Amino acid sequence: MKLVDQYGNPFDSAILKEPQTARIALLDHAVVDSQLDGLTPARAGRILREADNGDLTAQHQLFDDMLDRDAHLRCEFDKRQSAPLTLDWHIEAPVDASRAEKKAAAFAEAMLRDTVDDLEDVILSLMEAVGHGFATVELEWQRWGGEWLPTFHPRPQTWFQTDLNRRELRLIDGSGQGAALIPFGWIMHQHKKVKTGYLGRMGLLRTLIWPFLYKAYAIGDFAEFLETYGLPIIVGKYMQGATNDEKSSLLRSVAALGHDARAIMPENMAIEIEKVSGSGDGNQHLAMVSWADGAQSKALLGQVLSAEAKATGMGSGVADLHAEVRRDILAADARQIAGTLTRDLIYPLLVLNGAAIDSYRRCPRWVFDLGKAEDMKAFADALPVLAAGGAQIPVSWVHEKLRIPQAADGEAVFGSSPLSLDGRGAGGRLAGFRKALLCAASAGLPCRANPGEGAAAASALNRTRLATLAALAAPATTADQTDPADQITGPLADATQPVINDWLATIERLLADNPDLTPVDIQQRLLQMFGDLPTEQLVEIMAQGYALAAMVGMDDVNGGQ
Image (cartoon, rainbow, N blue to C red; front, side):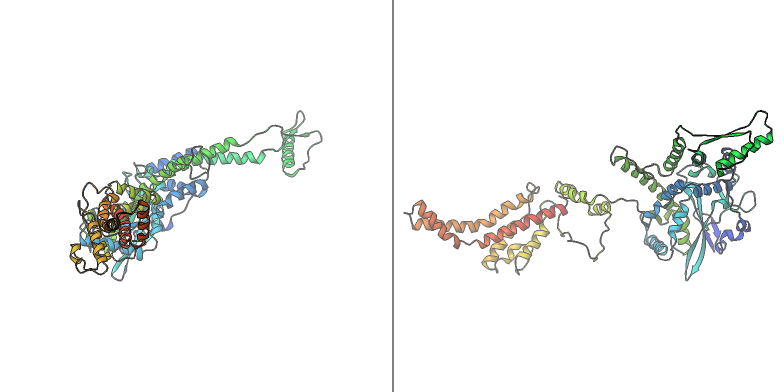
């Protein structure tokens, strides 16, 4: 069956029946060698020159030796290598995706999440490209039911060479040019954003060869210093005209005395033990080691604070700045890994399984979630104020910033759901809310678009309630939309006026019937009559006003006012 690879080149799918390396016997007998024995600056330079000419084997053997030998380098490299594993990921359909492209994206994500268990190992293997310049994972495609699934085989960098132009990576097969990599058979990650140029020069570990070498010399010298530090000096004295054999005998005696605390020598020879009275330390050696450690941390992580705890005298600002540097590096690494996985894993997976995608340009993409949740408390304090000030804040933007997924239709949610309000258009901002409030308050009365239509059949109390709520339901004017209290003050005053008018009418009748009452008598009569005043309606109206004020404020926030 003919397929088309990521670059638009057709090929026969029969080449995928077995891994490409299974057909190269030379790789089965590759010897694991070390480059540390007798490593000198001159030899290190020779290894680098060989890599420049396309022979990468010795250079990558040295890189592996460095990571095995240097604990600090291993620690810092592991921090960067494992950082992308902390990120969530998903498969994203292309822009303006068709139904088939969305289906392909969902299929790829389901396959990788449900049937492929070692994706974390793949990402770790690909991150070796940061140090080596490139990393390879061979794909072995197997048929499971009606679907093609990959098995991953990370391959060492020592299996590869460059072509004569030193720009294309090929398998070592004993020929001068090497074997070209088969399409759909490899995940090939080249960390080009770290360092561009020839393939042999791209790895960061190439830069770190020299700090590693200098540190090895410093540690060796420091170990020799510790062997003799504080020990007394043993001096052997031989007589005038001593022969070479006598001198050798004296030297053996001095050595035996320092090691075994006993020795023999000719009678006319002498040994003196002189106590060291001066002082010394190994600060110079340790300073070199500290410099090399710092150089390794800076090259790999862009900072040093994550490797050592020390006071900077500048509070947490320096630590925050260094954390931002690490975050920037993580984002750059993740984007490059995502591009490689899209090209060498997602596209082959979809093509082999017959997904309806036109070309690699319309292929669904592997995307790492690089978003960072904002301070939820700060948002909770600021958003209501901004919304009350007129900021139009989309709910989707709030969910995105706080990293809170939006609930699906019918899904249970935590807390209270926002009111469904008619918040669009001047004068109608509270129409839906006010209508709902009228229905709830009418206590069984018919609920119509015009609240006054149900008042005729209601009791006196319900008529008062509906009249009050009808006044509250009146659209707010443009001038009083800025403050919920201003919006309801007038309607509440109008709603309570009939009750107050009844009180005034009672007082007027009292005065008309008793014109001779003194002010003291009037005060006492009012106090006696106060308990009979109809306060129930007033209390209810005031309670409805308080509730409405709170709900109008909520509507302002939800409506973006």
